[in-house]
Length: 167
Image (tube, rainbow, N blue to C red; front, side, top):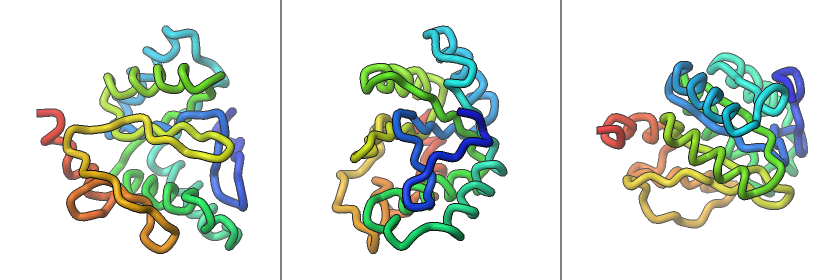
């Protein structure tokens, strides 16, 4: 996949068979990309996005999303991604052959400061990074949005909690 490719479902970004990973800084994303390459995953299997590129992609998706995109969590996920991209987060989208490799990629990314890593399957999108400060998950819906597992219930708070996690 390249940053020009844009796999969608109902007009919203849904890269099935990929792990979508967010990082607070470009340096962390670059370091994780190198570590992932050391596992044999590189080249076109790894695509990097800046915060600006992710924002542009999300805004285009939201403008062209089908009403059917609200049936799953794709709209909620891109809104959560948008909250992080607005804070300058960088992204890696990594093609993986199976769930186990996806989990190893997420573990590597977490070791390099990743905030989130979601494995996109055909029918389910799995969050692969848990934090000690996460609150118990509650029901998600198109109306309620994605559960960011933060005290306020807002995705933006994940970035605000970051210093407490690292300390």
